[in-house]
Length: 602
Image (cartoon, rainbow, N blue to C red; front, side, top):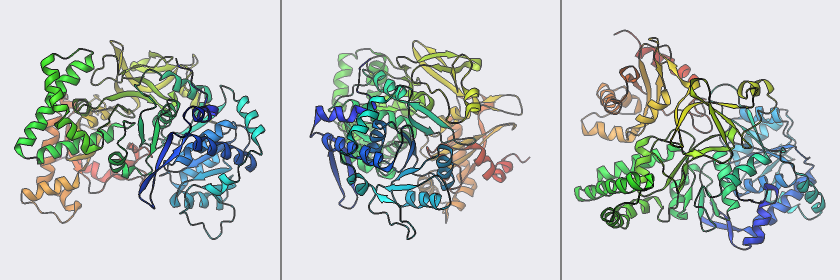
């Protein structure tokens, strides 16, 4: 296990090694260009910020919050806080006023760093209406202050107030950092119930970074696009690992810009969730279908050869035969290179992917296209990684890799995955009773996920808490069904309904544009999404697509009826978490009428 510098010293030690090399890149929206921050500038900003925070009165092990989209300033706050033994609580940029108010109250937050106008407006309302908040520090100069606001400060002004005045205090605090000091409190999105603050210590984060050494073919030559929110434990841990390896981080601020950013930055690596690759898969399938016959044949043949070369041989650790190597090299320089160029991934190295089940078809496609998807499994409570594919070990489509060094695993009742180790949380902030429900008397953390190990690889079977029991006594794993069906190009999202029902049904968010275009081709002209989703021929077509994909399921697992919804699921209506996972209980409540209609006797 490699000995990296601890978090409180990491940026400064890297600056001594890399100096004027580029550490961070970000898009300047006013100029429409990407700007660079050197390691030396990164370190200097972190030092000044530590000093400014001491001047502000931030105490040791005090909780401060960052409420922003991805910005370089957020990383600066992280490392400046670690150096003075403060605790960082990141919040999703999409958090509601109620969520922010809850976290601020639960963690007694006095100081909060905010990103843009939306975050500032919400945070100021929380401050104004009575809370522990005392000061807002604003990253973006474009934010317009409320006329009643006399206490907020812009980040660059706050940074300028830092000097070496408290250098001795900062150094003393940095030396006092203990392994069990809190570094982060990450409030889970909460698909059910109230958010819980997962406590991550310095030891957990430092161990997680060190444990990944040699797991990835990562080096100072890599340019990494940060796409997921830094609030997400996967992107957070990944960013720290990249910093520890001297990589250049290109910080993507707006999720909607990611495809544009990929084409501009040409990253070698990018952390993503399966949903991103599902979108890529659907887009490429659509492009193939729209190609002329010759190009379509070449693309399909390239993917077929890519499957044999990468999936049947390379993933299994077997050297491909010479004829296949020659055939693949031709396509790698032509059709596969064409696909990569469309995404801005000409320099692709590898792509860690976790956060949900990866549909086998999607994983197979990504690998066949010559992109090294490294699938993993983890939780906020495990400081991200529990298991991960190894680039130099055999890997199987459908597995979530091999256990990370230092992680202990055992299987409990119903094959539940139980975990122990230095990267596993000791519990939830100020919630002893909830902690006792999750961590047993022997110290094993209960994940709620079921799985098994085969040939050294971990496979997930289902989410125990999400298992549905039909009125016929059959158990249904909704996520398994949903992950199989969402690869269809006409399906954007799908949510299974089955609990205590006599058969399985589903709520479907279609790809409206594609479906409307298809409907027009068949003489069905709909004025809007409401008409489109209510059209009997359209519903029958979607049911036919689902039936084609679900043939491998047992009869009791197969969806018998569907309802097409004219609007996507919404954060504002509380139907999605900040990580865009569905809140089933909310959906079932919001669409109760539509669900009940599917179960009316015909």
